[in-house]
Length: 276
Length: 235
Image (cartoon, rainbow over all chains, first blue to last red; front, side, top):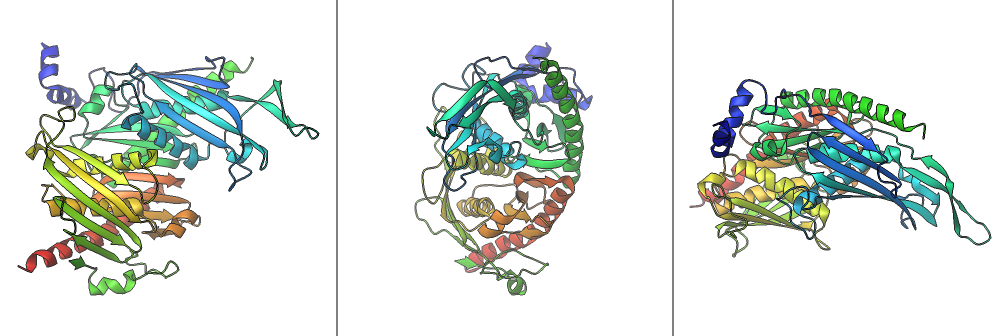
């Protein structure tokens, strides 16, 4: 009977739960789904991470290649993120050129990388004006169940922490680059941006980590990206119902606690990988 | 039909040059708006903020493709064309922001299974582009007679490295700023409809910028009201 009611009146069904301050999957309004992360699973990539946020599964792979640095910034490298939402992850996506959702997510990740200065582009330069690294960060969603931006940011961060670049020396005589695959070093990650997404319901209630159904029923979404000092890298609110300053403040405090949770998880994972 | 800021505020808003000092009271650039300038779209508006200028056209409510129709609401579509080059991923992201902002205010349920298309063309970009696009879109929607629950306006804030706030920054100020925040506010309760930011800043600075943007939006809404009053009072 509940299933029938849910199909006919999904919003009313949902409101019944919200009145009791909980959600259909049993979570509180401010509770995140179980987050699991697995790093180094792709052996052919220089760095990789798989993040699961409940059912939402996102995998990020980093490949490093050579390129000539840009002419207007000869001491900088490139970081090129790309988010792909294939038809595999959800029935709403068709095969073909990236849809709007994928493009918006790619732009969001590019903004987070640039705003938070997670990697200084100067660190990616091998020889100024001649050779630099370009990091291709491919983020692919394997299962879409809402809150894709949080999962992508976390996957990117974990993959970058896991990525190892080989040492490159420029041979003075030939002018060619010599790659030493035996000697690899980790990237210098300066900040740890963590994204926290909220969904707005009926112009008043704020819930954290919306699932796919909740996103569909919500009247607005908000994503806050914070780094460890409490500085905001990105406040992404693409329209939707209005929010007052006080509500924003609540979101900030939730984002701070989320950052601590994620950082702890990341540190545990990195520590378990180190003996390799 | 032109509308400009009232004389009292004009003195501090006339900072046509980039190096012009701005008063602490209202530091927005000179505005101008012209409506109903295009003959084909149902509504059109051209919004000028300093040297930034955006032209908007609205078609709707009109026929919608069956694949895009929503059974109980109007389908809103936004197309943003940059001044030079082909639209890219950044334009798509901006289109999404403007579209969601319009969806929050337009009463789509009054026109189900129709489409409302907003086309924005960037004529010149001298800073605060997204805010100018939002203002042009709002004026064009009003000109087209699309039912809305509130008006909205865009305000841009730039934070310098020493912590000072500059409202409605020019392109040069945007480049030198530590962070640039763009907000869309509604006219009824000055709530935050949309926000997009660039750069690093603290939560306290965010609240400061939001408060400054809310104060500045008063001027924008007053300007909308006067420009529309002037237009319709001629009859």
